[in-house]
Length: 340
Figure (cartoon, rainbow, N blue to C red):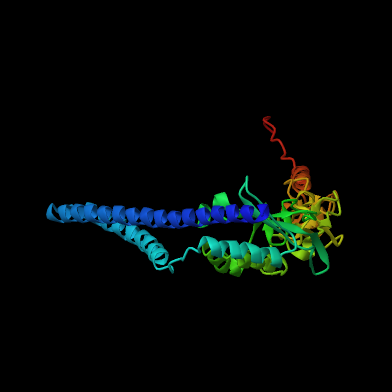
Protein backbone atom coordinates (compact mmCIF):
# COMPACT_ATOMS: atom_id res chain seq x y z
CA UNK A 1 0.00 0.00 0.00
CA UNK A 2 2.81 2.38 0.93
CA UNK A 3 4.52 1.71 -2.38
CA UNK A 4 1.30 2.50 -4.24
CA UNK A 5 0.95 5.79 -2.33
CA UNK A 6 4.54 6.73 -3.16
CA UNK A 7 3.88 6.04 -6.84
CA UNK A 8 0.86 8.33 -6.72
CA UNK A 9 2.96 11.03 -5.02
CA UNK A 10 5.61 10.60 -7.69
CA UNK A 11 2.95 10.79 -10.40
CA UNK A 12 1.77 14.09 -8.91
CA UNK A 13 5.33 15.40 -9.02
CA UNK A 14 5.63 14.38 -12.66
CA UNK A 15 2.30 16.00 -13.51
CA UNK A 16 3.41 19.25 -11.84
CA UNK A 17 6.69 19.12 -13.75
CA UNK A 18 4.85 18.64 -17.07
CA UNK A 19 2.60 21.60 -16.31
CA UNK A 20 5.66 23.74 -15.48
CA UNK A 21 7.22 22.64 -18.76
CA UNK A 22 4.12 23.72 -20.68
CA UNK A 23 4.16 27.03 -18.83
CA UNK A 24 7.83 27.49 -19.73
CA UNK A 25 7.01 26.88 -23.41
CA UNK A 26 4.25 29.48 -23.34
CA UNK A 27 6.55 31.96 -21.60
CA UNK A 28 9.12 31.33 -24.31
CA UNK A 29 6.47 32.17 -26.93
CA UNK A 30 5.60 35.33 -25.01
CA UNK A 31 9.25 36.38 -24.79
CA UNK A 32 9.84 35.82 -28.50
CA UNK A 33 6.62 37.66 -29.35
CA UNK A 34 7.79 40.65 -27.33
CA UNK A 35 11.11 40.51 -29.15
CA UNK A 36 9.35 40.51 -32.53
CA UNK A 37 7.33 43.52 -31.40
CA UNK A 38 10.45 45.39 -30.29
CA UNK A 39 12.19 44.72 -33.61
CA UNK A 40 9.10 45.90 -35.50
CA UNK A 41 9.07 49.17 -33.53
CA UNK A 42 12.74 49.67 -34.36
CA UNK A 43 11.92 49.18 -38.04
CA UNK A 44 9.28 51.92 -37.80
CA UNK A 45 11.86 54.29 -36.22
CA UNK A 46 14.30 53.49 -39.02
CA UNK A 47 11.58 54.29 -41.54
CA UNK A 48 11.09 57.76 -39.99
CA UNK A 49 14.85 58.39 -39.97
CA UNK A 50 15.10 57.35 -43.61
CA UNK A 51 12.21 59.63 -44.62
CA UNK A 52 13.74 62.60 -42.77
CA UNK A 53 17.15 62.00 -44.36
CA UNK A 54 15.64 62.02 -47.86
CA UNK A 55 13.59 65.17 -47.23
CA UNK A 56 16.65 67.07 -45.99
CA UNK A 57 19.00 65.60 -48.62
CA UNK A 58 21.13 63.92 -45.99
CA UNK A 59 22.22 61.24 -48.42
CA UNK A 60 25.05 59.93 -46.27
CA UNK A 61 22.66 59.49 -43.33
CA UNK A 62 20.13 57.83 -45.63
CA UNK A 63 22.71 55.28 -46.77
CA UNK A 64 23.71 54.56 -43.16
CA UNK A 65 20.05 53.95 -42.35
CA UNK A 66 19.72 51.58 -45.30
CA UNK A 67 22.77 49.62 -44.09
CA UNK A 68 21.29 49.36 -40.60
CA UNK A 69 17.92 48.22 -41.97
CA UNK A 70 19.67 45.57 -44.06
CA UNK A 71 21.49 44.17 -41.02
CA UNK A 72 18.37 44.30 -38.86
CA UNK A 73 16.25 42.54 -41.48
CA UNK A 74 18.63 39.59 -41.64
CA UNK A 75 18.50 39.32 -37.86
CA UNK A 76 14.72 39.78 -37.89
CA UNK A 77 14.26 36.96 -40.43
CA UNK A 78 16.20 34.56 -38.21
CA UNK A 79 14.17 35.39 -35.07
CA UNK A 80 10.90 35.29 -37.01
CA UNK A 81 11.77 31.80 -38.29
CA UNK A 82 12.50 30.59 -34.75
CA UNK A 83 9.22 32.09 -33.57
CA UNK A 84 7.24 30.34 -36.33
CA UNK A 85 8.94 27.07 -35.49
CA UNK A 86 7.98 27.43 -31.84
CA UNK A 87 4.29 28.33 -32.31
CA UNK A 88 3.76 25.74 -35.07
CA UNK A 89 4.97 22.92 -32.86
CA UNK A 90 2.28 20.36 -32.18
CA UNK A 91 0.27 21.00 -29.04
CA UNK A 92 1.37 18.68 -26.25
CA UNK A 93 -1.41 16.85 -24.44
CA UNK A 94 -0.69 16.53 -20.73
CA UNK A 95 -1.41 12.97 -19.53
CA UNK A 96 -3.80 12.37 -16.64
CA UNK A 97 -2.63 11.30 -13.19
CA UNK A 98 -3.81 7.74 -13.79
CA UNK A 99 -1.93 7.61 -17.08
CA UNK A 100 1.27 8.63 -15.31
CA UNK A 101 0.76 5.99 -12.60
CA UNK A 102 0.33 3.37 -15.34
CA UNK A 103 3.52 4.62 -16.97
CA UNK A 104 5.43 4.21 -13.70
CA UNK A 105 4.09 0.68 -13.21
CA UNK A 106 5.18 -0.19 -16.75
CA UNK A 107 8.66 1.15 -15.95
CA UNK A 108 8.90 -1.15 -12.94
CA UNK A 109 8.23 -4.07 -15.23
CA UNK A 110 10.48 -2.84 -18.03
CA UNK A 111 13.62 -1.93 -16.09
CA UNK A 112 15.32 -4.22 -13.65
CA UNK A 113 16.80 -1.35 -11.64
CA UNK A 114 14.25 1.44 -11.35
CA UNK A 115 14.39 3.91 -8.42
CA UNK A 116 12.90 7.23 -7.45
CA UNK A 117 13.55 9.78 -4.71
CA UNK A 118 10.53 11.84 -3.66
CA UNK A 119 12.59 14.24 -1.56
CA UNK A 120 14.95 15.11 -4.43
CA UNK A 121 12.29 14.53 -7.10
CA UNK A 122 14.45 12.27 -9.23
CA UNK A 123 13.74 9.11 -11.21
CA UNK A 124 16.60 6.75 -12.01
CA UNK A 125 17.20 3.74 -14.20
CA UNK A 126 20.43 1.72 -14.15
CA UNK A 127 21.75 0.18 -17.35
CA UNK A 128 23.71 -3.00 -17.75
CA UNK A 129 27.44 -2.71 -18.43
CA UNK A 130 27.91 -0.95 -21.75
CA UNK A 131 30.45 -2.56 -24.09
CA UNK A 132 31.24 -1.00 -27.47
CA UNK A 133 33.80 -2.51 -29.85
CA UNK A 134 35.38 -4.55 -27.06
CA UNK A 135 35.79 -1.53 -24.77
CA UNK A 136 33.83 -1.73 -21.48
CA UNK A 137 32.43 1.51 -20.07
CA UNK A 138 30.60 -0.07 -17.14
CA UNK A 139 26.97 0.51 -16.11
CA UNK A 140 25.34 3.94 -16.10
CA UNK A 141 22.62 5.58 -14.02
CA UNK A 142 20.22 7.73 -16.03
CA UNK A 143 18.86 10.22 -13.53
CA UNK A 144 15.89 12.39 -14.50
CA UNK A 145 15.50 15.64 -12.51
CA UNK A 146 11.83 16.65 -12.29
CA UNK A 147 12.74 20.09 -10.92
CA UNK A 148 14.63 20.84 -14.14
CA UNK A 149 11.83 19.87 -16.52
CA UNK A 150 11.12 23.51 -17.31
CA UNK A 151 14.69 23.84 -18.69
CA UNK A 152 14.10 21.23 -21.38
CA UNK A 153 14.28 23.78 -24.22
CA UNK A 154 17.62 25.18 -22.98
CA UNK A 155 19.31 22.17 -21.37
CA UNK A 156 18.95 18.45 -20.69
CA UNK A 157 16.98 17.80 -17.46
CA UNK A 158 18.77 14.52 -16.85
CA UNK A 159 22.25 13.19 -16.08
CA UNK A 160 24.07 10.10 -17.31
CA UNK A 161 26.32 8.98 -14.47
CA UNK A 162 29.03 6.32 -14.87
CA UNK A 163 28.78 3.91 -11.91
CA UNK A 164 32.05 2.11 -12.68
CA UNK A 165 33.79 4.71 -14.82
CA UNK A 166 36.36 3.93 -17.45
CA UNK A 167 37.02 7.47 -18.70
CA UNK A 168 38.98 8.38 -21.79
CA UNK A 169 42.71 8.59 -21.20
CA UNK A 170 42.79 12.09 -22.66
CA UNK A 171 39.76 13.48 -20.77
CA UNK A 172 38.51 12.07 -17.46
CA UNK A 173 35.16 13.88 -17.86
CA UNK A 174 34.33 11.76 -20.92
CA UNK A 175 32.96 8.47 -19.56
CA UNK A 176 31.42 7.25 -22.82
CA UNK A 177 32.08 8.27 -26.44
CA UNK A 178 28.82 10.25 -26.30
CA UNK A 179 28.83 11.38 -22.64
CA UNK A 180 30.81 14.35 -21.32
CA UNK A 181 30.37 15.93 -17.88
CA UNK A 182 27.41 13.55 -17.37
CA UNK A 183 25.62 15.08 -20.37
CA UNK A 184 24.57 12.88 -23.28
CA UNK A 185 25.11 13.91 -26.88
CA UNK A 186 21.72 12.79 -28.19
CA UNK A 187 22.54 13.20 -31.88
CA UNK A 188 19.65 12.34 -34.19
CA UNK A 189 17.62 11.20 -31.17
CA UNK A 190 17.32 14.71 -29.70
CA UNK A 191 13.85 15.50 -31.07
CA UNK A 192 12.37 12.11 -30.15
CA UNK A 193 13.82 12.23 -26.62
CA UNK A 194 12.50 15.75 -26.02
CA UNK A 195 9.09 14.76 -27.37
CA UNK A 196 8.88 11.77 -25.03
CA UNK A 197 9.61 14.01 -22.04
CA UNK A 198 7.07 16.62 -23.15
CA UNK A 199 4.35 13.96 -23.36
CA UNK A 200 5.29 12.25 -20.11
CA UNK A 201 6.31 9.02 -21.89
CA UNK A 202 9.05 8.29 -19.40
CA UNK A 203 9.41 4.64 -20.32
CA UNK A 204 10.12 5.61 -23.94
CA UNK A 205 12.51 8.34 -22.74
CA UNK A 206 14.69 5.96 -20.73
CA UNK A 207 14.60 3.35 -23.50
CA UNK A 208 15.81 5.86 -26.10
CA UNK A 209 18.62 7.16 -23.87
CA UNK A 210 19.78 3.59 -23.25
CA UNK A 211 19.63 3.02 -27.01
CA UNK A 212 22.01 5.94 -27.60
CA UNK A 213 24.39 4.57 -24.95
CA UNK A 214 24.38 1.12 -26.50
CA UNK A 215 25.30 2.36 -29.97
CA UNK A 216 28.46 4.07 -31.19
CA UNK A 217 28.37 6.82 -33.78
CA UNK A 218 31.95 7.20 -35.09
CA UNK A 219 31.12 10.52 -36.79
CA UNK A 220 30.42 12.48 -33.59
CA UNK A 221 32.12 11.10 -30.45
CA UNK A 222 33.63 13.27 -27.75
CA UNK A 223 36.56 10.82 -27.87
CA UNK A 224 36.82 8.09 -30.51
CA UNK A 225 36.95 4.50 -29.26
CA UNK A 226 40.24 4.00 -31.12
CA UNK A 227 41.73 6.73 -28.93
CA UNK A 228 40.03 5.68 -25.69
CA UNK A 229 43.10 4.22 -24.05
CA UNK A 230 45.17 6.98 -25.59
CA UNK A 231 48.71 6.65 -26.81
CA UNK A 232 51.77 7.70 -24.87
CA UNK A 233 54.12 10.42 -26.08
CA UNK A 234 57.41 8.73 -26.99
CA UNK A 235 59.32 11.41 -25.07
CA UNK A 236 57.35 12.38 -21.93
CA UNK A 237 54.84 9.49 -21.86
CA UNK A 238 51.78 11.77 -21.59
CA UNK A 239 48.53 10.26 -22.94
CA UNK A 240 47.21 11.81 -26.12
CA UNK A 241 44.62 11.14 -28.80
CA UNK A 242 45.41 10.61 -32.46
CA UNK A 243 44.29 14.19 -33.19
CA UNK A 244 46.72 15.56 -30.59
CA UNK A 245 49.72 13.43 -31.59
CA UNK A 246 52.47 14.45 -34.00
CA UNK A 247 54.50 11.97 -36.03
CA UNK A 248 58.21 12.53 -36.54
CA UNK A 249 59.29 10.93 -39.81
CA UNK A 250 62.95 10.94 -38.79
CA UNK A 251 62.69 8.73 -35.69
CA UNK A 252 59.25 7.37 -36.72
CA UNK A 253 57.59 7.96 -33.33
CA UNK A 254 54.53 9.87 -32.05
CA UNK A 255 54.95 12.92 -29.80
CA UNK A 256 52.69 15.35 -27.92
CA UNK A 257 52.58 19.06 -28.77
CA UNK A 258 55.04 19.86 -25.96
CA UNK A 259 57.66 17.44 -27.31
CA UNK A 260 57.38 18.32 -30.99
CA UNK A 261 57.85 21.30 -33.25
CA UNK A 262 57.97 21.96 -36.99
CA UNK A 263 60.66 23.00 -39.42
CA UNK A 264 60.47 26.74 -40.01
CA UNK A 265 61.61 26.25 -43.61
CA UNK A 266 59.48 23.38 -44.96
CA UNK A 267 56.80 22.95 -42.20
CA UNK A 268 57.72 19.30 -41.63
CA UNK A 269 56.77 18.06 -38.14
CA UNK A 270 59.76 16.90 -36.11
CA UNK A 271 60.31 15.97 -32.49
CA UNK A 272 62.54 18.16 -30.36
CA UNK A 273 65.23 15.49 -30.45
CA UNK A 274 65.38 15.42 -34.26
CA UNK A 275 64.97 19.17 -34.73
CA UNK A 276 68.13 21.29 -35.13
CA UNK A 277 68.38 24.91 -34.01
CA UNK A 278 70.29 27.01 -36.48
CA UNK A 279 73.09 28.84 -34.59
CA UNK A 280 72.65 31.91 -36.76
CA UNK A 281 68.86 32.55 -36.88
CA UNK A 282 67.91 30.37 -33.90
CA UNK A 283 64.98 28.71 -35.73
CA UNK A 284 64.26 24.96 -35.49
CA UNK A 285 64.77 23.15 -38.78
CA UNK A 286 64.73 19.56 -40.00
CA UNK A 287 67.74 17.68 -41.31
CA UNK A 288 66.80 18.24 -44.99
CA UNK A 289 66.93 21.99 -44.54
CA UNK A 290 70.48 22.11 -43.10
CA UNK A 291 73.95 22.13 -44.66
CA UNK A 292 77.57 22.53 -43.55
CA UNK A 293 79.55 25.68 -44.09
CA UNK A 294 82.33 25.00 -46.64
CA UNK A 295 84.95 26.66 -44.47
CA UNK A 296 84.16 26.05 -40.77
CA UNK A 297 81.99 22.96 -41.45
CA UNK A 298 79.48 24.05 -38.81
CA UNK A 299 75.84 23.14 -39.58
CA UNK A 300 73.39 25.94 -40.43
CA UNK A 301 69.97 26.16 -42.04
CA UNK A 302 70.33 26.57 -45.80
CA UNK A 303 68.84 30.08 -45.74
CA UNK A 304 71.72 31.26 -43.54
CA UNK A 305 74.39 30.12 -46.05
CA UNK A 306 75.52 32.23 -48.98
CA UNK A 307 77.36 30.32 -51.68
CA UNK A 308 77.90 27.57 -49.13
CA UNK A 309 79.38 29.93 -46.50
CA UNK A 310 78.00 31.08 -43.18
CA UNK A 311 77.93 34.79 -42.47
CA UNK A 312 81.11 34.73 -40.36
CA UNK A 313 83.14 32.78 -42.89
CA UNK A 314 81.86 34.92 -45.74
CA UNK A 315 83.00 38.08 -43.96
CA UNK A 316 86.38 36.50 -43.20
CA UNK A 317 86.88 35.60 -46.87
CA UNK A 318 86.08 39.15 -47.92
CA UNK A 319 88.61 40.49 -45.43
CA UNK A 320 91.27 38.06 -46.66
CA UNK A 321 90.59 38.94 -50.30
CA UNK A 322 90.76 42.65 -49.50
CA UNK A 323 94.12 42.15 -47.70
CA UNK A 324 95.56 40.26 -50.65
CA UNK A 325 94.50 43.03 -53.01
CA UNK A 326 96.26 45.60 -50.83
CA UNK A 327 99.49 43.60 -50.77
CA UNK A 328 99.52 43.04 -54.53
CA UNK A 329 99.24 46.75 -55.45
CA UNK A 330 102.68 48.29 -56.62
CA UNK A 331 104.35 50.93 -54.38
CA UNK A 332 104.58 54.23 -56.30
CA UNK A 333 108.18 55.63 -56.82
CA UNK A 334 109.12 59.00 -55.24
CA UNK A 335 110.50 61.77 -57.61
CA UNK A 336 113.63 63.55 -56.22
CA UNK A 337 113.41 67.30 -55.77
CA UNK A 338 117.14 67.85 -56.59
CA UNK A 339 118.11 69.24 -59.98
CA UNK A 340 119.97 66.70 -62.10
